[in-house]
Amino acid sequence: MIGKLAVVVLFVIGFGIGVVLYLINISIYMLSKAVELFLYILIASIGIVVAYEAKSIKEVMAGIDLSVRLVIATILGSILGGILTALILHSDVIVYLAIALGMGWYTFTGSYLATIDSYLGLLGFTANMFREIATILLYPILSKKYPIEAISIGGATTMDTTLPIIARFTNTSVTIIAFIHGLILTLLIPIIIPAIMATNPKTFIPSNR
Image: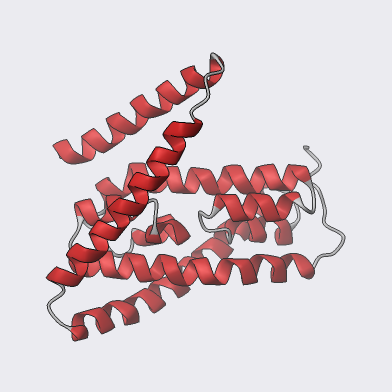
């Protein structure tokens, strides 16, 4: 419980510091690069530990099987979320499907949708960034009862930014599933979003813009 609370508290503190630095206009470019480097090192370390602790190839193959099923569930859940959001906001289903199917990859989703419209780019970036934040905050809590199912919240981020959180609160088997799940989604998203937007060339911009 202490570990889970620590993750939330540290995130909130870091977020607060980031807001203050932004308000006083202090660049954090070097810090962001250092964090990126540390993240890569951490992911590599997790890979070494997972490979060392994996009991057998059979365990890895079982992880692949579960990951594929989880990917399907994540995509279906994202589709449902996109449709419900569009209905609630009385807006274009295609647009919100594309945003929801960004599945946490906010840099790609935001950048791609921005080529169509800057407002859509902002929506895509923000919605998917919050999905990553939600994973960081909620996974430590949900992992106790739903370690595998809760991976879906992270979407594509489970292969990189949220993988350390998942590894911290679960075990080798779940970490393998999370990484493969995120990897598959990362490969699919650049195909899915353009395909969806291509079905709606006259993109409708929400009326409450």
